[in-house]
Image (cartoon, rainbow, N blue to C red):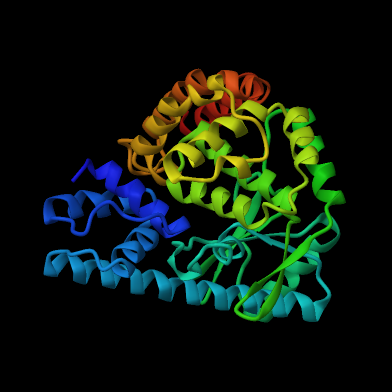
Length: 363
């Protein structure tokens, strides 16, 4: 038996690509940290699914835990799928233009959709449709769409499922990058993905790859991200490998100054998740590969969206803001050369704005 991390990646590669497992049993003292790691990385469904499908021998209590975890994630997926369909049916009946992205639209691209651990439901409405969408949601579902301080979205719950209603799909500190993205989004020709028999409007394959990477990388640089997001990018690239416009994707990455960041993430997919390198749409250089230890340090330390990297558990107070800023500074230093344009703007604009906000709130 190799290390827990080796077992973890072997199970993910089996879940994603069917790669044969190099073991037939897992002892209790490996299973416990394995499930803890999978939980931090938000991939329990994939790990438990691989254990069960391959009939890996486990202690009785461990086998029961794997079964319960897998079933609970499948049920959560079914609940999230149902809410996506409710949202789509409501918008279609009212003639509201929308894009649902991430989440349940990506789970459909997995070998076993019910194994992707679900989160909230993210959808976007442009300026021409946003106000009408809010009014329809509040009237039809009798909920209040909460407009907090977010620079990207409002949120609400329906049937216990959190939904984020985006007026901005992603926020960049660099104005040129932001404008370039908004133009891409405005010109995008959407496609549909089948969610339990319902056609759900989402981004075109090429833009979806770009966005899903940018979302991953944004969280990686800011606070941290889990391996679920890497699995999302891998499944998206693999599913659309024959229709992605590689030339356009390379052009967009260059224009937004994220080429090396994308390649560095790509090497994690290839080296750790077993993604076929020939399917990756751009060249990965040795310099790009050299960032692997830095990226893995952030991912394994912070876990899903960096929630395990901070000692301050309450997301408020001066100590929380100080710890968050120090964590960001550490990530900026490690990854600066992968995306200098956006990180420079974050240092000149984003960080000072956050310091000022913290000062105003706690003076």
